[in-house]
Image (tube, rainbow, N blue to C red; front, top):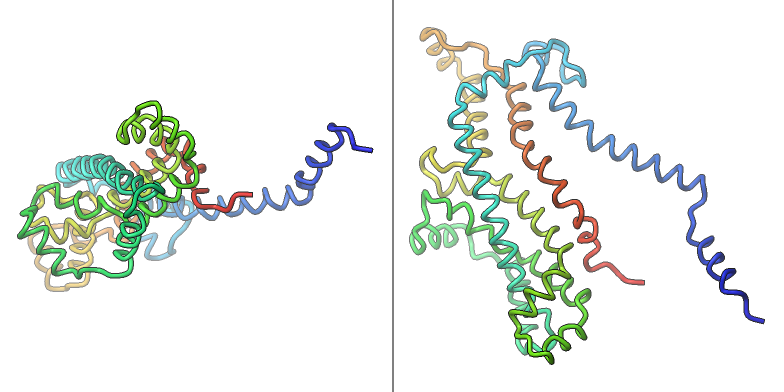
Amino acid sequence: MAKPTSELISGSNSKNQISGRASVLINTFFVIYSALCILPLLLIISVSLSDEQSVMTHGYRFLPANFNLAAYKFLIKDIDQIVHSYGISIAVTVTGTILSVIVIALYAYPISRSNFPQAKFFTFFVFLTMLISGGLVPWYLVYVQMLDLRDTLWSLIMPLIMSAFWVLIMRTFFKETVPEAVLESAKIDGAGELRIFIRIVLPLSLPVLATVALFQTLTYWNDWFLSLVFITDNHNISVQYFMYKMMVNIQYLSSNPNAMAEITRAGGMVNFPSETVRMAMVVVGVGPIIFAYPFFQKYFIKGLTVGSVKG
């Protein structure tokens, strides 16, 4: 005799439910893990608000031994350059992320279609770029001599637009998540490939688009190497590279007795807050990314499951 439907549903739910003890253990684990993620940031903020001498004497503490804003006062001495570099980083990050998502999606969609004859070739081609690099010197010559992008914002955008890894991730999402029947129905109704891509594929792919956008945003915002290679003046440098240069200068002056003697004779600052300034730079650098993350969070978790095994 067949069991009632209510009993089957109840039995299925009981198998999927987690016991109270297991739930406590799982919640405890994630609380501890979250604390381990948050504590380093709190330590960085605490050190940036501490007195340099206290840090050198007592080490890092979660509560400032002697509250002091000397590190931030030191940074805002060049506030005009910091604000300008912030503007450069924001412009490069926003423009680069938008263009990157568009280019990656335009490459990933055709190679995800089963009716594209060269799909395997172009998939292997983009995968090959993850294994073999053209070399730093040819890469530099392409952007400086052939494209003439030195000292332009495009030199900070173009090299990071394409990512083979995210092309393969987005291809997997298009192939496994977007129903082939929906695309065929749209094609029968007279929709072209571009219209199908814009009206059907992209709206169904918001999770992977948000995931790619988040990681590309982090890539552009944290980059300082491109400013080092392609920018020769301070007008177009990113905020990350500006802070890197400032930190290198502080370390050089702090470790050079002759330079410190010249600064002392000139009546300049003798004690540079190197450790606290380092932490203050981190706080200034990561601030915008922390505020940007909630805008991606809605689709980010869904995007993390791209390529997972379906039951």
